[in-house]
Length: 61
Image 1 (cartoon, rainbow, N blue to C red):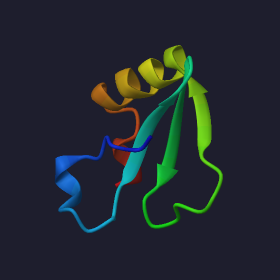
Image 2 (cartoon, rainbow, N blue to C red):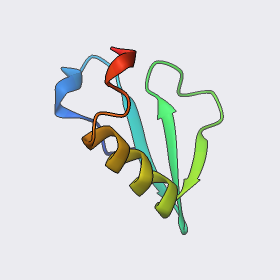
Image 3 (cartoon, helix red, strand yellow):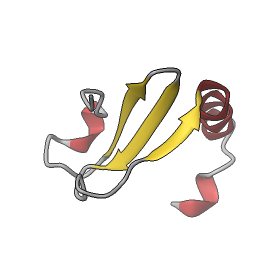
Image 4 (cartoon, rainbow, N blue to C red):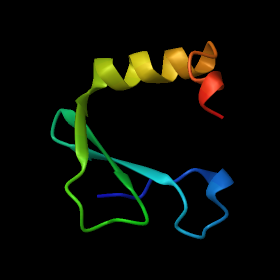
């Protein structure tokens, strides 16, 4: 299910992974695969990506 990793992760399991569960998108920390993933609608993921592209989270880095 979790095949989508950022190429910026360097392949060292230091990333967030996304996967599809039916109509929903699951997200998990690759360092903690045993934990229950967070699940979002496609609209919620689209809003998060749009916010990131507009710099809404830049203050967190």
